[in-house]
Length: 49
Image 1: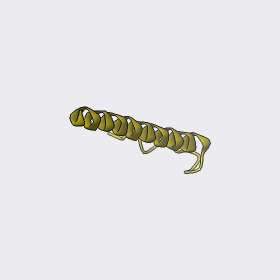
Image 2: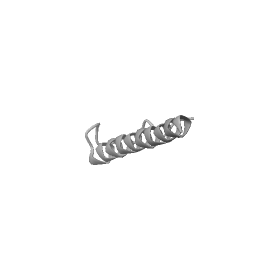
Image 3: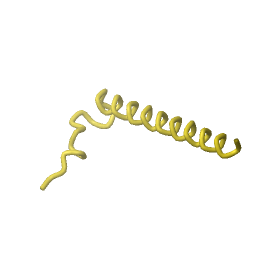
Image 4: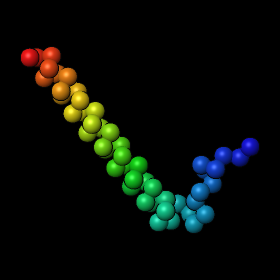
C-alpha cells in the first residue's frame, strides 16, 4: 500500500501546484485562526455581560 500524499510532487518542491497548495493551506490556517479568535472573543464578551 503506497500513500499518494507524498508522491504528488513530480516537478520538485517548487512546482506551481505545490506552491499553490501551500498558499491555500496557509490561507485556510489563517482563516481558521481568525474564526477561532472571533468565536473566542464572542464567548469572552458574552461571559462578561
